[in-house]
Image (cartoon, rainbow, N blue to C red; front, side, top):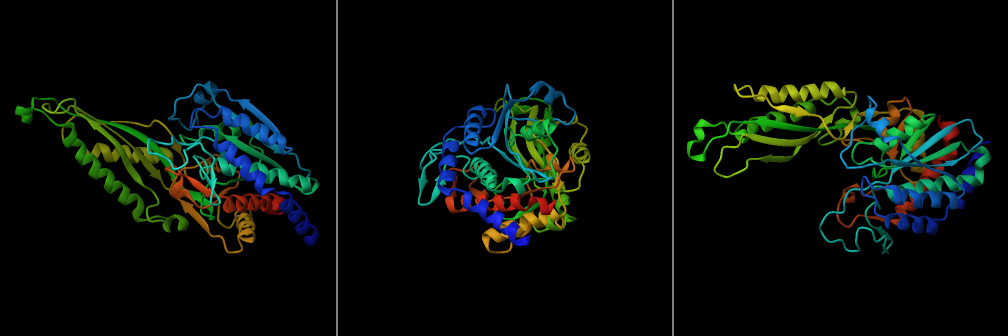
Length: 415
């Protein structure tokens, strides 16, 4: 029976076509899909899935209903519609797994690219363009991996590839898909993890603050109360709060990181004129939430820190929680699914694969919130994600697809 299972896995691996995989990944990269504008690439991927023998289902979500949902995960990009795509390989094994990946990408920025952000150029064995790493190429790898399993479909689980929108600004696409269908035994998201099997992710909450002041002429500034001066105390308090969050990290995988739970203020704006004491300062940032932590408690903690910093007799600050709301998530490192994913990737790579935690929010938490064991595992290159000249080695893309084939072929024994 063991020999038969290995033979079936090998048959699926042999069905994978690296050249077709590279060609389809390049085609997807050539279609711009900045968050909020994903439909065109989803239409292309639906055609790709059909050509591979999968069952595509391109659908429009009820955006108004999702925004009214009490667990709405937040949004930052402007959008008028939300589309999703599933591509299914109907199996006969009594298990059902999900391969999930997002097709939305961040803006390419204003700096020049060597080949252009939407080129899909292959040079020196590397695929260039926005989404090569994060993560349209990995979505295409998931489609090809599922299709390769058609060679052993009688013994394979049902595999559903979710191609989702809106991951970059909060994860609304995966949230919508799981509202539609969450009957999965396990899930894998091939984010660029550097071949680590990620089973713990920090939360990340976006906040907006307003510090009030009192205006006065610059020549009589003592009559005013500068909002900038007041914010300096807030900034120092936030730095101390970040230190406290990271002083006693409990989760063993998160303890391995240099800064497990970052707290960053990324934008500050104040003042209308150089000769006037500013009466208003706005600041925006991102708060890391510890694995196992509560989102509401994290918000309350930051609000208390800001309030204490402004205990100077002036008006209190206003804090609003807008944009993406990524709760933390974890799947135990000793869970059979985590171990099995690690073993499948290790067999493909020919070396040990470590379990890891990451300091960034991801769609993993949507699965674990529903009791679905989920891991993230994928290629190197996260340092190139969101950067100019994003690119991925085709050898890594093929290795990812083969690893996904191994995971799916073994899924029935893992869950």
